[in-house]
Length: 171
Image (cartoon, rainbow, N blue to C red; front, side, top):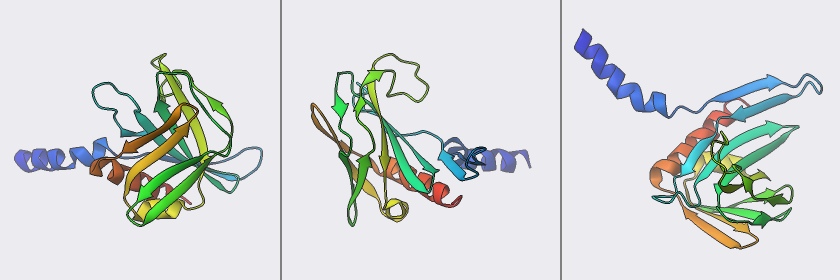
């Protein structure tokens, strides 16, 4: 019996470790539903951590937001209205940055544990349902110093799909 329990625990451990958290609450002032997912790292940046990317989803005021935190370690900005492109199996999903954003110390990390420069982008997405059903292979984030093409591994793309599906289950 102990062996079966141990084997079951070991088999379920990966799913417990990578479980995305979704919170849903009602705003006290507007009475509207607000849904937020946990931050998930979808690109590690390799040995240097360059372009390490975290992502989360938020629904507020009837609008879907996709929030990105990107490690840049250099001064850069992103214009209001700048498109962020996600390449999927079936085409391109476009996000739009909602405000002018400048890099800041610790902005790349959700916990702000590091003072290296990063950028925090809040984007709108009208095609979020596509991300639940299509695999994202590449992201293009355009900043003032040029664009960054970030290739996602299959496991990171799957993590993004799971995050979107969990987010949609609360809507």
